[in-house]
Image (cartoon, rainbow, N blue to C red; front, side, top):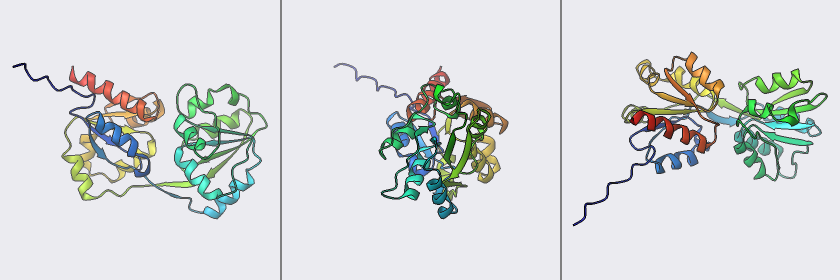
Length: 264
């Protein structure tokens, strides 16, 4: 009788993947991680909410309808922007951009074609695109949430553009139940955290117990950009890496490569 074949080891078997995305945007990543063998721990680091002053945000969006460009900083910015604009009032700017392919895809679902970076899927990558090299005399609406990076706004202003920041949603600190905390503490190691915003780290560090933080900082962390990687290091994380972008495939590829090295 032939020996039973050995089970094929999946890329993330034996590891816990800590997903810090807000609940609304984490389903696809969670499903893919589980299919690759990961024990998934959902630790949403932010709660997304509509703009604190939706009337003011809507008025500013309408005021910017004739802008030279609208730049969306996340898929969530797309969702909340279109909710504010309402049916029958699509954006009419001359050009549209997303900071990554995921944001451009969200815009396409609303019938808007948008440019996005050919290289790094980030604000820095978008700024490397030739079309934004000389936006002198442009008026640009930056569709975002408060507390994000200043890189886009500051760089575009240095290049001669007038930039108006339109806050269409909020990122609020999370609330984590005792049950979710226990799920984390019981998760097998290594814990591999996927982090796509500096605010996510700050929110979690503000609410997690000190003993959990001390353990977490020793575990590997994958940031979606070099900027977030640098921030994680300033927060005393010891084993920090960065993915090619915040796209699901890039985050999971980085986690798989890290775990492969860990198994050697």
